[in-house]
Length: 143
Image (tube, rainbow, N blue to C red; front, side):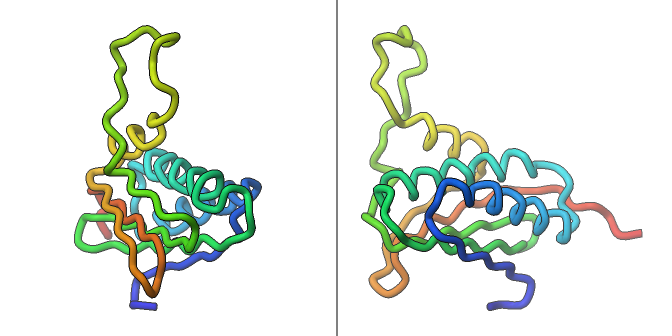
């Protein structure tokens, strides 16, 4: 683990979403980040829910989450070894069409893109699926 990097590993179970949300909030507070906590928690929740439901399809697995601050960028890396899925392959949702006629799905990924400044995905043959999200954050000034 790099200096200033925080890590959490949890079983891929929906009941661990609150553990993940608490971890994100605690890390951000420890790093002096007060704004954007809810947005980051929501994006991470969407990503981890998708991993649990689709990458692991309800089967056992582990989700590893690491957080770090680089300059004014709060970076969250989420790694899993489930079925690969590239969120960049999902087109933006049609938000103009009536609800009854819209294609189901894709709103979680849309939300992640809206809440975070950058969302990248890649597959590492050694580490697994890696989702890296960045959020530019104002930091509390030290007094």
